[in-house]
Image 1 (spheres, rainbow, N blue to C red):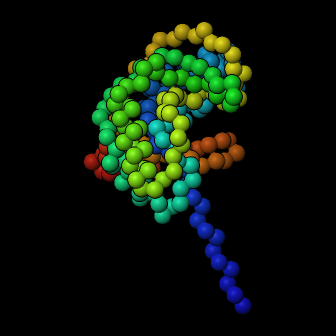
Image 2 (tube, helix red, strand yellow):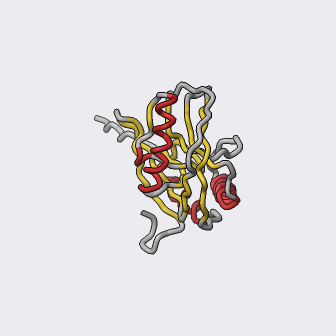
Length: 186
């Protein structure tokens, strides 16, 4: 009698992101609610509000340590983002918030992170980087004449996030943080 092989472990769906603290998430959610009133759709939960740096998708569990190495090699210095504009992409119904000007430190972080990931053998999206915070899905996009007070977001670190799908949608958990805290990634 032969044994049935154990199923292969499921890959981890991961991405690098900037993750605001709860007070910044609350301010961004206020702006998102105004968009929601105008465009409908499904509002992002406050605890899920983030700005993606590099999306990797499904990564084999044995390759996750390479992500830690890539993050450690990325050039990071604290900076601030002024989130001051909103928009909506008709092709996918995603409404977003974003800075008008991308900080140089953010561009340097993304570029050095992408280079380290490419050197480690990861395939990356070839599109130019467009920083945005997804706040609505399935929105009825139209021209927006929306003004709001900018949200000043001080950025002190970046994170590696694992996404897991359940009946309520995507659930995110932070699995690494850089620069490392004294006790290591959280």
